[in-house]
Amino acid sequence: MASVLLLTGCGGADPAASPATSGAPTTARTTSAPATTAATTTEAPPTTTPAPTTPAAPAPVVVLDPGHNGGNAAAPGVVDAPVPDGTGGTKPCNTTGTSTDAGYPEHAFTWDTALRVRDLLTAAGVQVVLTRDDDTGVGPCVDVRGQLGAQVGAAAFVGIHGDGAAPGGRGFHVITSSLDPGGPAVAAGTQALATDLRDALTAVEPVSDYLGTDGLDARGDLAGLNLNTVPAVYVECGNMRNATDAATMSSDAGRQALAQQLAAGILGYLGR
Ligand code: ZN
Image (cartoon, rainbow, N blue to C red; front, side):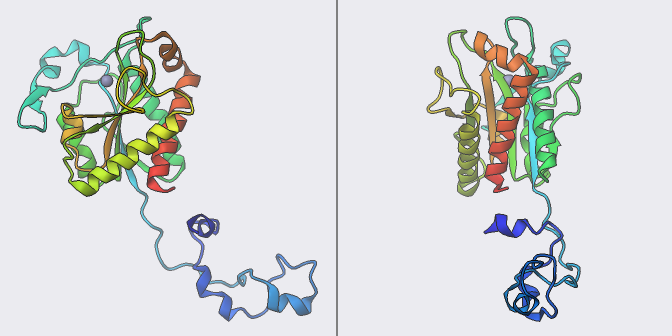
């Protein structure tokens, strides 16, 4: 139903408001029909339909969180400082992340992939907020990242990472917080978001064969999820230490394919 109505365009008038007042038939779609029958059979709205007066629904906001940052390795004093972990304890502000055996760093993978997802979501009418502005800075800390979704009223928060597991393990997995920090309704949204992303990503990458269940894993040790009160996940897009995953994650085509499925999963969750 919704998709049919959307075909009229974002600026389209309410189709229910105009047919009853239809006077002369439009000729736009009745050129092969006799004029005497067009008046009673046409379903096209009159060409004089008034401009809509109701504003379009606001674009949903999605926070994309590209893990780590390119300047982290050179700033251990900042990156190692303790910040709240969402369980009453602390953990380091941020980490440097992993890399492929060939030296392609996780922070570069997450940044490039996030920009690709951003562009796809923006083209679909979604407002995207990134947790960092470039790939040369330091941080922000995980607690700051984890609270951004609530601050901007996000419908979803998606962290993008690459794992650094044993080389024999392959595949992606989607992580949720086991602490349900936003309460039951947000937790249900988180599970739906995780499932939609898992289902979409299987088009380009197998689910992890070394961690989680069917590509899903719940953890209680990630501040960026524990402090998140909107539907929130981290996606470990693959194992950067696995040769097959590394080849995908290191290539433009591989990152674009991953980004397309990440965007598809997010858009599916948003119902768009
Ligand atoms: Zn990471």
